[in-house]
Length: 317
Image (cartoon, rainbow, N blue to C red; front, side, top):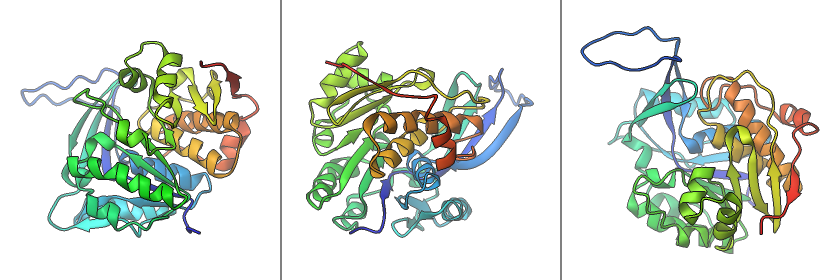
């Protein structure tokens, strides 16, 4: 039996979040005063890993950082959050990646120096055991290099043959090709947002989009922000339309924390409706602080909202 509940594979990097409601950068050496600037742990995979650890799972992260101050800082923050770093690789030949997020509250722009972010390789996947965890979750598929993207479905097949379940959150495809058939065929659970699932399915109707994607053989849970979530889990259509009332700061990492909440519920054997409610609650709670990991997130906090943020079974056919 694996000693990890969850292994997350993907990206780890610092996020510099610059926040102000009227943020509009101006060139010509114009200096502007902003409300806040924060250096936080970033990377979709890392945020999901930290969220899952705070929800009581034993979690590891497989990612790459450089042998520099930023890589060391991010590694220490993972360890402090209780994330196992045995599969974290340090590459002395490359700088740790970084994202600068210009946040206006209702919208944001992201500037990313990829550095080590896209450095996961087929060899990193090959080094993982056949059953590294109860679940293996892959984040930021489209940020990774072509070698890794080609190898990931084969790695998922190997994990599943050993009894490990797989999940994926690809994020947006900048080329808008959405060639995911080989990956979804080896994925137990797919976790897109609403725009992504509609792009993949080429359907503007959410229920139809979920049905199209689920025909690859995977469960699907669609993130809808303040509108909650819609899912097909274990053959059941489930919907959440209420979210917790929180003092909103920003939505950076909310989708990744949603993933953590859903996986925590599934791994703990909760029913599909409760799992989706847990996901929405966790993702929403994360918006109460800067970045994806600074909010107070715990099993107790999520459980306290389950009576008022309930999921209902619906027909999605």
